[in-house]
Image (cartoon, rainbow, N blue to C red):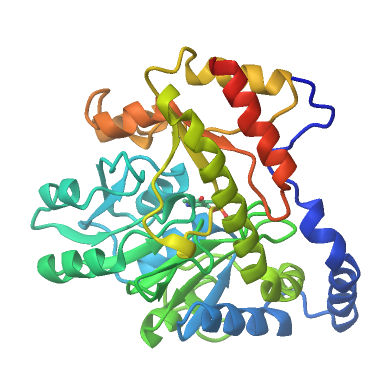
Length: 378
Ligand SMILES: *Cc1c(COP(=O)(O)O)cnc(C)c1O
């Protein structure tokens, strides 16, 4: 293999370069207006992002983690409540539940999609179960129809972790429009990313929206009058101004990711017999491929770690999302889970590899990645 240029895991320059001047002007505008906290750009971005997602209200917060913690609280979920979530998610989903004061109940996943296994979730229901958090992992939504049937049958609140699913679609729903409320992250490498941290809760429920506005702003419906112990977690006006410039490009960026995924899918067919194949897409073009994840399984002669190291040695960067499921993280030992509790998630954690994926990745680069995988396995 002679790959001359490094293939990064994510390349943000490609999306920033064409809009750099506009972003600079937007930042300059905020400096001139001086409305740094909950300024004009925040309200504009909240309205635009909620509307694009097919929902009435958006409330900007400081991060996706805060969006989960405060969003759950705004939905009335807290002490004494059990919340079901998948163990194979980014740790922030679990942290959000614990910060809201609720008891997290972890469940296993479907190995074909890596999405939450609703049959496993059903078995985890108790009289204390109040909510389920579907994580739309890698940019693919958990089936809205199945989710709503599930939640209706058991009288549960759906709170979506849509941090990887900005404008994803499935069965006529957009990411974040399925449940009572949803959390988004604008961490720089998400499909819609700020130039720093940011997050949002979206909802159709006016009471939840009002409670969120209070919670993120010291629990004060008006200045110096506090009706609840809230916190300080606001989306910065500077970040909102940048996000306002980026949002109109999101659909194009998502479709660019989709095209890249289709290219990967086609080329990877040749590797299926060697035990390398992508996670299943059950949503067609509604999958927005925040990540493009393959599994490395029998009879592949090399294990995942060896493959990742060998790719790195020739300049191809990859990732693992995520190497340790939540139930095996040392910080959460006190939850009482053990190795063996969630076999699908544990196996996936050993097999998954996220390939380079970002809007504008070229067909040539995708060819190089798949060729490299191929030559490692023959
Ligand atoms: C990124 C992410 C979060 C957390 O978002 P932050 O903005 O980093 O706090 C939560 N859940 C999932 C699934 C994520 O990918």
